[in-house]
Length: 638
Image 1: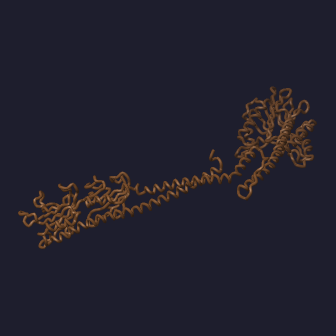
Image 2 (image 1 turned 180 degrees about the vertical axis):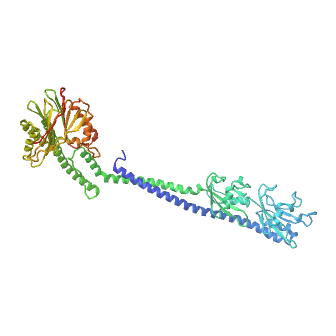
């Protein structure tokens, strides 16, 4: 009910269109904003990761500088090694211990000065000891062997000492010799706690975490402590190998130990084979974008509501005259045209429609009055045509006739193509022993043909009583019809006179169809020489054909409405089809059976097509049980 009015639908259309535009624009803006936010975030986190890597590098450079300076000093001051390492440890609070391990001069007689160690305990006190006497032989230990090959310095793998509950890492530098290339190793050990502190002190978003990987893919430091000293996942190592200074997106489907997509920022720590990594959940990056988008969507919905209210108010004010027009149109539909429309100012579409509707109302009233008059005239004409039809049919004799002696029986019918037509049939007695039968077809159709048909029948009944031959009947009838026939109408007519006692039949034709004779189970066309149609030539003459009907013979007289009936392909019914139809009638049938058979076959042939012409049919049957002999044919010429 809400959306039945045009105003409501218009307002809803405006809102829907605005919503589509808003959603499309918002979606494109969201995509663009996501890209901008991602680019900006990547720059920020790359800068953060680079800053953290720089801090680590500065710390490492400090430790490495101490080790390298100390190794250079010990090149020529081996004997002062204990004092030097003690002094250096005292001045560098971040260093846990310093070892100056030399290649023994005599492996069989080791002295403490061969591998002095300066250690700082938890209270900060410095203790000077030696690696000589430790269970592990220092010059064959992996750290010492690696250190001999680190003339430029290198970091040793992290380890956990037995006397300290923390992880340590040593930086080793080979001590050059004066007579040999390398004479020992300086190992400066620091606590890994500072590296973990660097990770936790980063100013990053919640749920982001940092880590440091060594060259073998092991976590040196990680905000999740359980990951320290474990191997990184293959997905993370693959991402690090292919990063090339760019952030890499990793998803759980890649095989990483994560529960949602993340972006990882890798920055190598210069001077080491370490890599600093920063992992940020993708959802955290876009959280602000989604929040802002939802706020914008809410504001857009409020805007759409305002647009809807404005549109529906404006549309209703604009459509109010249309509502009046719709109400008045319902009055018009009920035939109520006596009403007034509001006067609208301006020349917009609604005002023009209002004026046009009012003009239409007035013109429609005029047209309705005219249509009513036409309807009354048509009804009167239909009534008059029906009366004319009744009068025309009243001019015709009864359809069925049987002679007093029972030897002659006929049946006739007339089927006009419209209300009235020009076909006719007639029969009447000529004295006591003769019967005149005729079938005709007027040249026109409708009322003129019906009037000419009525005139023909009336004249035939009047003039034929003084004649005994069909040629005389046609001649006198022709002369009368030619009088005053300025319209040149004419009628074709087949006329026959039969002796009711003998069955002798005399036929004459005025341009009419040849009759059909059904005798002995065979149907044939009776060859009757024809004269001109009636009403054209007052001097015309009409030859006659005489034949004698025997028991069961039936003569069919018809108009061209039968032979010229056509189907949907415009193919005519034709004389042969008529002969076939008559031949199928069983011997001894009544004249009515012949008529019904022909009409049924014609109707089947036209298959519902509109009638082409009027149809008149007359069947004449002779019944004489004692008739014997042969049929007599005679022709009389005028």
